[in-house]
Length: 416
Image (tube, helix red, strand yellow):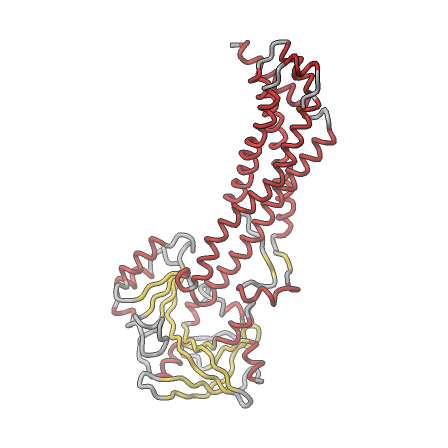
């Protein structure tokens, strides 16, 4: 038993000593591995953060995780297509009251025109329940002037800052809203601007006008129906169960997830996973040339030494194992240093990175002026696994070359 353990211990010690025989070369290679794994994790964290921000922005901008509409509404978002009152759907009421639904709200959403003393602008009028919108959408947290709506009967309007600027009006001024009622007649009424909201997207500020849902019903003479019901689940990544239950409870309605409502983001998520893997492989390919070159040089310098220990009785398999252990030790030390460096880089940025200098160019994608890196355990594990496994595979060639040397030839001449 003792004899079988001795070669492993001996080979490991020799491999460790060989690793530091040329300190400069080893340190350069360790630095390359550390910077490579740091680049993998850091770049991936930035990309994940960008995608997460875009998803959060999309979800908070009224979509929620799941939306319920009357059939035909998505093709023609008018007051003609309304869902019946919740009181007529006990199954849906039960689902909305369950623990799977974190928040939900009913809305009326129709195209409209808003007019001030100086300009006219096409908008989307959204009638909301102010209490239910808290925690579901961005509205309540984005008011910078005036105040949030107090009830479903609040007669004031909430406008975006950019829309107010385009209309050349201001808080507490009167504007006129026009839309179409169920009989295709023009519904028109004057309102005062009760609050102004600001968001990271100018398009959101210029598109939406919010009012109490009962106020909108009175304006449009629409009755108790709603245009949509928006739900927020526990996790936007795991909606299959909630989606199935929602479709069962609202079998006569059109039920869609945020991925279906925003297919661009859905495709971006799929592309992101592929990008991460490609990015890891590209970084590794750059590292592999240095790793293989380092091991080949180490083997070349020790050609006569390797021939000598083979002549003294060391098996070729032990030679191969010795080179592989050197490679594994170098990879593990480099990975450890790279992971620590990544942690030290990302931890201080928990409040985000200010990208306001380029925010206008990123706004189309739903990003704010502050970028929050997002580190996923899956990405860290994948990055380390790619470097360790592929690095070990790349080490096989120089290790195999070393183990194949004929002792007498290695002793008498330099390996060519």
